[in-house]
Amino acid sequence: MTSELPSITIKGTGSYAPQKVLTNDEISTFVDTSDEWIHSRSGIKERRVAAEDETTSDMAKKAGEAAMKAASLSPEDIDLVIVATITPDKPFPSTACLTQHKLGLPKAVSFDIEAACSGFLFALETGAALLRSGNYKRALVIGSEKMSSITDWTDRTTCVLFGDSAGAVVLEKGTIQGTGFLGANLSSDGASSDILHMPGGGSLIPASENSVATRQHFLKMKGREVFKFAVRAMEQSAVDILQQHNLTTKEIDCIIPHQANLRIIELLSSKLDLPMDKFFINLDRYGNTSAASIPLALDEAVRSKRIKSKDMILMLAFGGGLTWGSSLIRWP
Ligand code: UT7
Image (tube, rainbow, N blue to C red; front, top):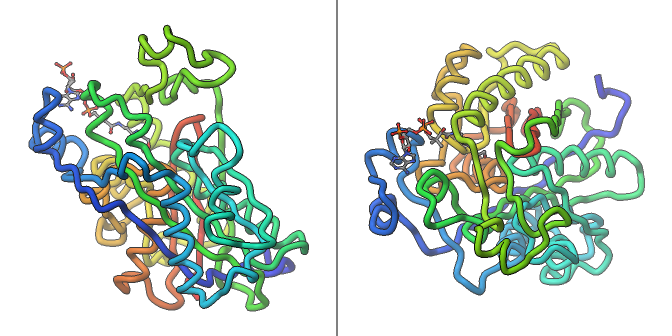
């Protein structure tokens, strides 16, 4: 369906996870939970937590550097930096601008995208579309999150789930049709925005003594509702994108799902009739890293040789907004 458009090649991937590991047992020392509960309900064993002075742009820089190295590119080669995040260093300027500066990219146009945990897939589609516009040749697309900065560490229903990290890919406008980024199927619906959100810090509830005292600057979630939405949305998006590209599930070599909950992925596997060994999973070690989860998993899958040349990769995401979607990549 995109044969007349320039192809978009994946030139390299990279990722970064902070050193500090926070285990389920450690969390159970400060909230009423247990390793058994967390692992059986989510599949998560541990997550990484950024240092106090380590920001989202610091992590984005490290993931971006690794992706540029994998792509054998120098700073002058990058025309665009797009960072997907819900935990920017500051409300403005964008984390992408800060990342561009830290990476020393002299000519990259830089901006953020916010689509919560689906953000990386939204950023990838945006990067590909801008490359196809003809004005840019290479884009650094990054998902980076310091979820620990918006986690309410007194709320056991959310604090056990999230972690910090960053992942990145370099996209390049190419000529070989049928490889690289093949397309996306993205969706949004603001009607249920309150099942997963952070109420404070924007124009609705600006920061005040009261907003801090009532804990408005932390992520809030109705877990069961999000769970049901996640399975339904990712299943539909997978079915739609396969149909759009005339593919069957048998032609998919590897699925990179948003790494939120192993039970969500298991249900998806059974609904799509795709065996679990086709799903790449690393949420046991990182938890849910929001917009970073897919590029972090993609980079691990590439570096561990789980993804091989010519593999067809299906990426599936869902998140606050609500937002959800899928992307297809034929690995170069
Ligand atoms: O990127 C998008 C992010 N969001 C998600 O992916 C979240 C999707 N939802 C989920 O992953 C699951 O709904 C959770 C893991 C959040 C929760 O699992 P659940 O099986 O849906 O549990 P629940 O919310 O139905 O809670 C069951 C019980 C409750 O107690 P009662 O009411 O049955 O007495 C909770 O209070 O478990 C209790 N509970 C906990 N117990 C120990 C909730 N959190 C904890 C906890 N430790 N950390």
